[in-house]
Length: 91
Image 1 (cartoon, rainbow, N blue to C red):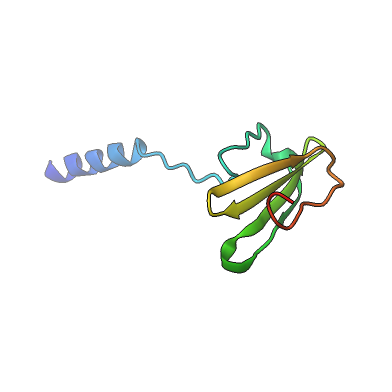
Image 2: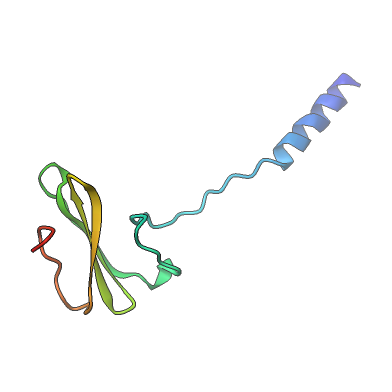
């Protein structure tokens, strides 16, 4: 009887455990992207000590440039997806 009750409790515990294992693109919290499947031309960059331009991508015919600096992550939006992101923030 004890074995059956332990077995039933184990099954009930595993039945109600839900783990979300979906993969998603990590973007800065300041950018809202309702459909991440529309992101194109995503590129990552590395700079000295992780500073400067770290990521760029196209979304809705605009270019988004993500920078790391002393103040944290900051993003600029360029009106045309064909433009290149400046290497340093504020140029």
